[in-house]
Amino acid sequence: MKACFMGLGYIGLPTAIIAAKHGVDVIGVDINPQVVELTNQGIIHIVEPGLQELCREVVKAGKLKAATAPEISDAYFIVVPTPFKGNHEPDISYVENATRMVLPLLKAGDLFVIESTSPVGTTDKMRNLIFSERPELEARIHIAYCPERVLPGNVIYELVHNDRVIGGVNPESTEKAIEFYAQFVQGKLHRTNAKTAEMCKLTENSSRDVQIAFANELSLICDKAGINVWELIELANKHPRVNILQPGCGVGGHCIAVDPYFLTAEFPIESQLIAKARELNNYKAFWCAEKVHNEMLKFELKYDRPPVVAMMGLAFKPNIDDLREAPAKYITTKVMQGCNNAELLIVEPNVAEHKVFKLTDYREAFERADIVVYLVAHNEFKSLPPTAEDKVILDFCGVFKK
Image 1 (cartoon, rainbow, N blue to C red):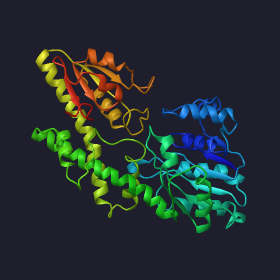
Image 2 (image 1 turned 45 degrees about the horizontal axis):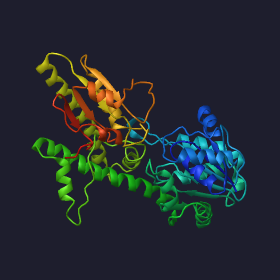
Image 3 (image 1 turned 135 degrees about the vertical axis):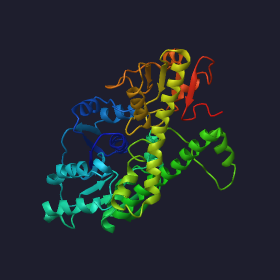
């Protein structure tokens, strides 16, 4: 079997590599020539433990190659971004463009799967697009939706061992998709229809957003009440039916910070709690930036000079290089805009360089800083002293929970 993966990003590339490792001949397609060139050299352009070795192995074996245009295959997978437009309206243009790219190549018996997180009904829209352009393929190809549900930093394991929800536009399409994923997925493959599979992905991430919002709201209350929120949550979780998540400086990433908007845009009346959770998690990042500004002002009033401030972390979660929708990046930008001549040392140990931020080594930043602001709980930061007499430490992500 030959499979074509449209998109070699944080999900497309690992999935293509895993499929190739399990014997599938894979062509990976990306519009970025640099990504294509690196992939064909066996080099990954993202940070993901263990993936580099696998990539080199499958490229050397001839099981994976990359290109800027698709080739005739037996199965096509759409794994492109689904951002939102103004007013948080979902933008499925990337999915549509990728579908149009493979349209001329489709033939009877092929499998077409969307993995990109999408609004409910997107798979049906792409089915209608395909059959309007290629009516001779109606009832002769298989179309399905199968969302990923992996954790960055543990993608290799979870792509293989996690359960998958697979929903076809008809039962035959569902079975055809299951036949493909069964080649490398050891978790259970759950059958449903395309709309339910689309809704399942949005539900999973919206649920987590709501739960994180509760933790973030607790952190706001505890800050005002003078209570250690980390200790509070640890104690509350001793209850056998309570499992409160950990607060942070907001919510980021291309899933939890984005997917709920797909529901609030389409179901604005019905999604009241989901919308409020999004609002609260966005507010937490603004609140953190204001806390930093207040500490900077107090320092300057006390010492009659602007402080040196270390902004520790830019990624949306610990120990990865993914900065998409990262609240830490938003907070750092807000602090930069109101720094009043303070010196900002910006730290992200998982990124070598950034086109906007000049990066500083985390050890140097800690030593030089008057105010240390922990935004992401990277492992490197846990080696630093939890307290220092000559520094103000703002820990928004629980690097030092006690």
